[in-house]
Length: 173
Image (cartoon, rainbow, N blue to C red; front, side):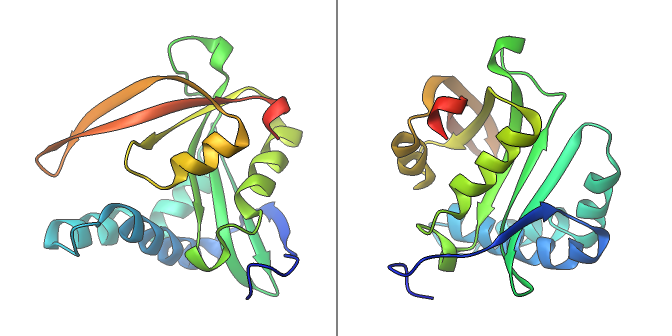
């Protein structure tokens, strides 16, 4: 699909039949984003053991998670996973956007913004999320007008992973 052409999609709640495609998309996006120094065995192990059909099925049944997908003609383009029970520092920052994953073929076509806008219509704003400081998605959140409200770091794969924390309000969407 050409990035200069108008993009069409349907956004809806994920259902159990979506879970295998969600697992594949999540592993693909995660590896594309984080395996910047090549596909190491520990990256493959993480992606393959974390992003499973069972993982996504469990999210559909979890009381605080909501999972929405964007698709066109049965093609999964991206998804957003929110955690209505997670806070960053204060309830004033809203709920967490746990994951916003868009397949690289559909990035730059409005899918991410549309998913976040749909979430805002359903659950309100504000919402917060964190993203790796080296992730290209930081440019997306900057263009969106998301407010940088902090940082969050954790240890993974023998390194400290530094993240930017953003707050998104209805004015950004």
